[in-house]
Length: 303
Image (cartoon, rainbow, N blue to C red; front, side, top):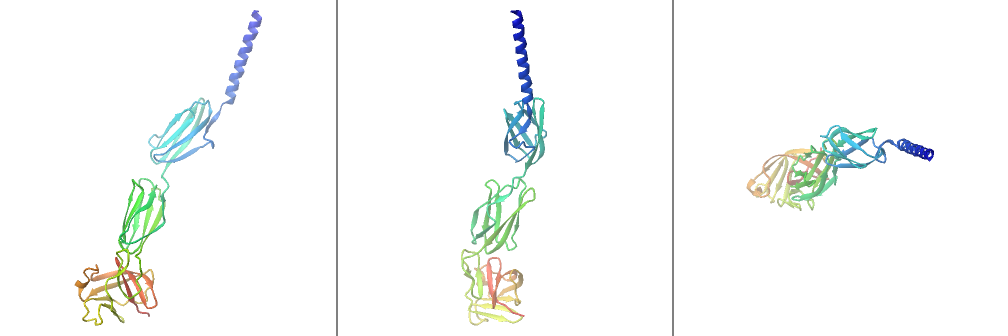
């Protein structure tokens, strides 16, 4: 009987030894995610969740720089949280196994909902969304004619634009990582400036500043717009000097505006002085010159 019990005890010990040996042989290296990640990228204030495999099935983790990222383990789930942009790494331990995972906390990708918008003068746009780019993203506004005001509401992610009068401008958004997006802003009135004269571009629809009864082109000198048939007695006379010669679309011309009776133009916003006007259109006999809040359609000289 004692001999039988002795053999049974040996058999149990052998079985237990084989089971322990089998358990150890099944243990594998730690695997991070289904693709066995060696590096993880995420944005600041975001969290990445990854399932761990291998090892003993029980895991601990720590991070080299806790100012950049945080790590936490819940059973077989690793959670990595971005805190500040930068690079660090996490160390995952399971029994005798150890695994390093590099962590990159990167700037959120810059995105803008549109590349070009068209507005009417006096419109207020609050429908262009702008997101990402990091805490130090900035706006650079290319608006030589001062046709608008623009600001970025970072809380709502909305780019707010207030249009003033006709023209074109560009808003460049530069992310913290120096990547850029550009929004083109086109402000246009309804209607066209078909006849020679002076037009306002500060409202939804274009309208004439004065009823130009006669336009006198003085070769080598300039152009006179008159509200009457007699230039020297008309109450409204706008003199545009010097003469515009061979204008080119997209270029600028320098002119001087003077009035015979300046008070007659007080309600129009036009003032005497020097102006740098944009050549918007060149027709067979006249050109469209655009200023801040007005347009001139004037005959030009060909040489």
